[in-house]
Image 1 (cartoon, rainbow, N blue to C red):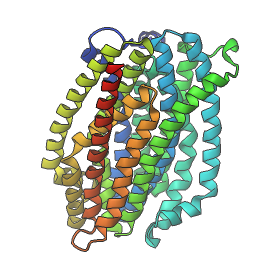
Image 2: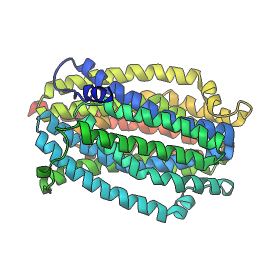
Image 3: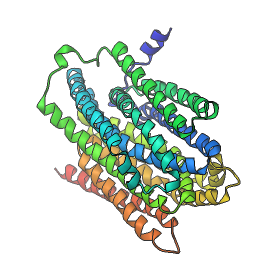
Image 4: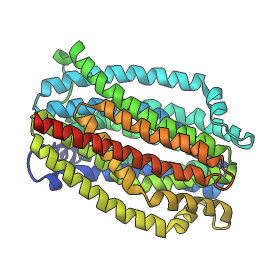
Length: 455
């Protein structure tokens, strides 16, 4: 029975044919559910830690989460960039090129993963100093990182295979393995934290074990159920031209993802300087924030696969029609989710923070009101990232990220220094960065489209 189910769901989706909206939604929906599940097990960590281990533990885990997001963004960016090349080849129906490019990408990104893992353990004390962690939570912060860093290799495994499958239109299988991982993480969180009383170490250990379940699970699926994509002996050869193309896409996507999360890391360091209450509120607020707009982030990734397949197939008119359809979808969704978050900010904060801690809840509500009103800005930005990555202009995605994050970091430090604003100045800087990057990306796209039509 299990084999029949796995065989039935390995069907790929050709995004170069059929109704655009229906195909996009059918492909994007498992990505959205998958990211929501991923956010769910991050939220479970935050919820259990905040409720049962206290404010200091919540602040430590929240800051450590920011570090892990930055590190894993390097690997996710490399895998995501490679998947654009896979999608282009799938649009051309060139399966030999997909297999050979996957072999090259796998080996290259594996080498980066090993190096990164060695570096973070060697630089652990330096990371703690850079993050400006208050003395009272440093032991817990170090304890959590020492365990969570062991999951970096699992993150690589899951993402390289998940991006290969998504590139050929299979977004269901990665979702299934993520669902298994999420369920295991929740169960292990309860066991390790509430049952064994392992504290923040238990939270980290639960996440790492769950990551390896999804990583090795999807590896086994690829090995036994992906015959047409499985690398063969003839595919195991170096090709400098393929490597250069993958490197260009992957490096630029990696830089874009890393800059984005480095900016967040710098903001986190500034947040930490305002004390434990602001740190705890920011940790909970960011979880709510991310959960709210993660569906549009995944829709942007699905849109990127749509654009890459149609770009590879040479279907420019279908591509342009897809841009208009995706833009309308994102604006509608973000308008609804902004209303929900702004209206229910206080109850949402109370999920993570004890209702008696009015100071932390109040700070978090202020954060959510500021960010929640402008989710359309980040939604459009995700589409722009995906579009430029898919049309072989990943450098433009980097430019937009630099504009968005550069504005955010600069304004955060400037505005928060004003006594009348304080931490609120940090919250204000974020949507300003989104909107400025949106304006540049849209104007550049319009100008480029006009130039292509004249040519």
